[in-house]
Length: 604
Image 1: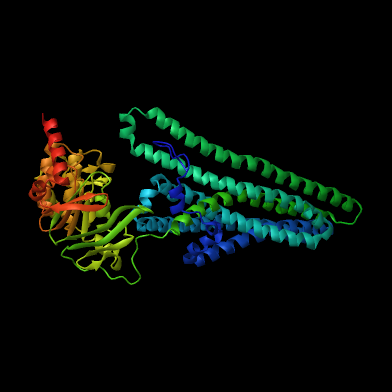
Image 2: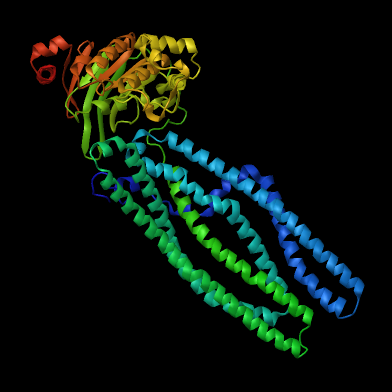
């Protein structure tokens, strides 16, 4: 568990590990089988090509043996010609089949990865907001990039290596026993040592490759966190601290990689040494038997030819083991995400929410992020359809959490949240969100055009509708400032626009979606007073005729709300209109007095 400050998550946080728990069963490569099922005939063609390649390579030493013993030995030129022709033909067939097999297996592997990546992304989109708030973005990116890439070599090359070398090895074992059981058993004499060395490597590399996957995910998490907070990093002159933190994460990743390299540097040369020892024993014994007349020259030549086909598969499969370990470690992480079910999900057979007027009821609602520490406690609140309700209170009072419960980003542990009498847990999430819009503190814009961002909540909107929405909230000033109008390019996160312009686009986007319920979460807190006045005018147009929930620290933006609800530690302490609450002289009046004095000091 990490305990350090900014960028200090130098090891996975406990809550992250809990929400994305390791799945030992997920390491099994058979969990990839369902992704091959849509491509059964392509898989069958690939396997046939592999069998053809194997048959062609195994036929050549046998043809050489027959040519030597029966063509040269018996001085039969016709046998020699036929053997040479078949030898060349087998080589050509094997070469053509190998080329087709490489294309087929790569095509198949890329389709499988494409489907897996899409499924993983779709699943991540279905996970509730709480998952994304707990798991660092960099770790999620790692699942979709480096972990998928770790599977790339396995499904495009590794499976081919496994099947081809497995078939070759089994074929060679049978052929060696057919030729000479004594020499074949001599080849197998290295197996006990091979099993011991492989068992040692398997245990060590399994741990090392899993640690490598964890560390590369951590490097991406640190990188994403630092880059997304670059303005703060540079604003506080903390570049050196950021470099040191990234360097430490990078060092840990390097050390994890070095552990796998150390194991491989011992294991693979060891395998080659065992192969060389087995080959030497066979050569010594076989040569003596040829000299004694107990073995023909052709059989000895074929045996030597098959020896490379005997030890090469062992070496290839041994080298494949590191790929398998890296892939299975990545697969465990991917399957861990896929087996993480959304905590906010549709009930089986849940109907869609019908078109609503927008009346909201919270009854006996209790919600806690951490067990035993309620953020909202036994809260009941009724909001009339078309009413504008402002939520105010000190930081941590539960305002944003209450809005998230209404949007069903979370489900309460106790009580119900209903719209027009429909319990939100009894209807589909999509049908709820289609009738709702949210404008957050910082209007998030996506890379693309201004039109792309405006259409985000209503993809079928026409240019005239988008222009009308902008005119309603902005009066046309924003379009005048952009040279290409709706076709103007917007950079990632809208960094080319001012904070006020981004918020005005967010308001226009929400207005274009025409929601029945609107949530504004600190929508004016990041802009200056003049821009705030423009946004307040946009808000008046945006809120008209909708059920609206305003969350704000600046009380100037909520004084015209139909009702103001004051929260304290997850409970409602008072509610009423602005004038009523000021006259009551309670918590709201104190907050208003503090705010008014602060504004007066700023104005002064």
